[in-house]
Image (tube, rainbow, N blue to C red; front, side):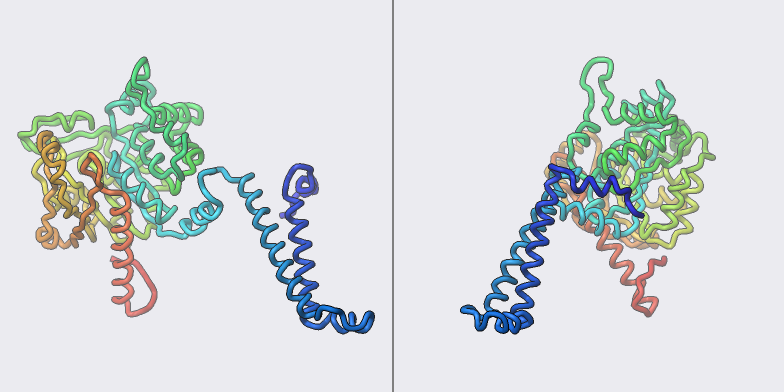
Length: 438
């Protein structure tokens, strides 16, 4: 499309600091061309005809002129791109090559869909964004505690907390705005609220739609990929326990007495629908990731949306469940990796190809977690094999004050696993084409 003439004239405006470098590059190009002609004897014959033999051979003069011209072109173009980059860069902490890498290379990465919520999903996303920009995070919106719970009750919006965490995790760089989204008020009437939650609530009110508010926030934070709620309908979780008791409300489930275990978890209402973008992402996915996150309050709630579970069942992409590193008091007390898988498939038989389990030793912090009732999750690799699921065990621990997955290790393990799956399928198909089939 041809730009209006007025836009072209702007390139010639005073103070642009672009014309000088383009002019210098043009002079360098002319010098290089003249030198090339002289070195090739194209000009030398005419010089001898007019003035006789020159004191310096034309080939020497031409070669020197080519070198000088090339140096001028390189210098001018370098300054031109530096000026242009400084003028248009929206991320001053990054060099132009980093921006181009993010926008071109990562845009061609694998299409991954990650379902979950809480801290676990945001940890995974922080690692995955280094490998691909085609990440879709599907987030449970049943949280009714803390800031999210207050905003749900006061404003009637969907729980923004886990969505905000995922937006921040996928944000393009560590900017002040990103830190602002994480900021939590410590006193006054806003005590306990995070700025990001309030921002999403305000955008929802302005736009009249929670999904639009997420899209606008994604643009503001330059998110790599997309974040989508599992459903746009208000939902609550109800847990039924082995003693017949029931608890409604995600925030109340971990507070139930630990002498009974969760039998089933359900959504109220049960017949909710997901945004169409969620189904489209699942249909196009190169891999589907479940977790990490709270089994009953983050991972399974996404699968209780009927259309999501059905789309996962239909998908030929490898399905990878990322098991938690530690058990969670009030939810998964005493459960190993195979126990997690059994309960997940009992609630939604979506099929699993792989289960990632941690084999690292969290002994340094074991006493702290043991006091809270949390223990390392037993890998149970033999039981996983008996369930027809391949257990993939490796050290996935982060070296912090918390026993959590390391984002980089986790992402690299997943990418290696997907590559191995695709290579295995290529060998089984007997061709050089890489296809992902179950």
